[in-house]
Image 1 (cartoon, helix red, strand yellow):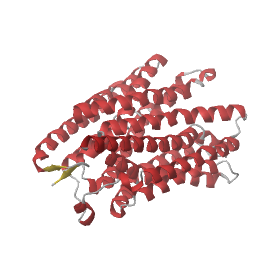
Image 2 (tube, rainbow, N blue to C red):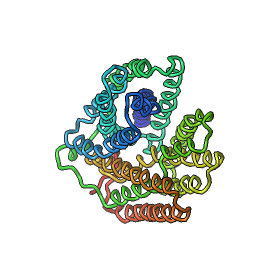
Image 3 (cartoon, rainbow, N blue to C red):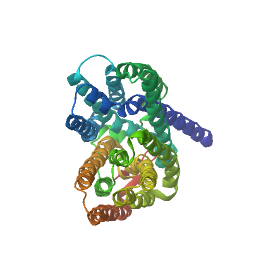
Image 4 (tube, one colour):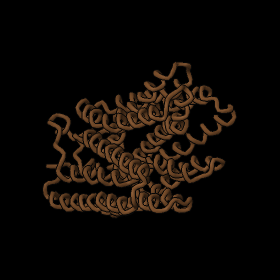
Length: 412
């Protein structure tokens, strides 16, 4: 009888991951598909390079920084599905770019989509962490990221085809994205009806009592992630570097490099998820150590073959960042404060990449000697790895204070 119930729970968990993964997939078709043409569209509307850069930077900052607020509110209200619906609903901003609304309104719509990302991510990751109790956090986030990346690959391909057959008609391309957005809403409603509140199970004391505090191991881990992402070169700079070394007639290779990143990301996320469930938080040492290679390869050599090698390594790291980095949060945090924890984690992740973009962009612009890049990479990644090891040791010292229940490791 127990085995039948356990089998049923696992089937429900897999169904939940599949449905939430399809929701993310459809969302990525719309907003990831648009990311490749938003900069050129703003230029088409009359924006300068500086304005395009500022809009992109501000959007990414809002998309990460506001997750701290949305995660806290999701924990306080327990309205996780409300934040999920609101966050995915704001993706409608992208198809609305197809209307003749002017430059200023286009900027507002782009920022609204990033605001939606901030709303939905902590709540969705929290729901996934609750589901993972029957399967393992690594497998759960790995499967979800695999489905997510299918959309991240399919979206840019769809937009490329639309732009090609419409003779670079931005308004037609953006307006067409209403169709996958409507499909996204349909899948989201169906997902809520099938799993809904059943995916969120709290212990009675967690509902009636106060939210439990986040522990030192979690904050040490968040700091490690911040440093790790600060030392890893962003994909935008990788693509920028590619555009500078390719001939004018070879610029079509640049989006293919972006697709290579997404293609490596997807299977890596799944495999890393299984490895995390087998080896635990120690497996994070792999992406932390690999993170040093992309910036060093790109800063050292300006040949396409070297850049492709850096791109592949970056895809491996990104796949692990977006799966097992998130999975580790569920091991380090109590259920009652997990939305807040994911908000803090994502904010640290975003701030790290903000620092990375500024530092490596400046190093490229000033043609800084390679030794400076080596120094920066070693400082950030060695400190990040040391912090990760500190997280592991602190977690072990706190084990005797932890109560293990069916939903998570909760601080006693």
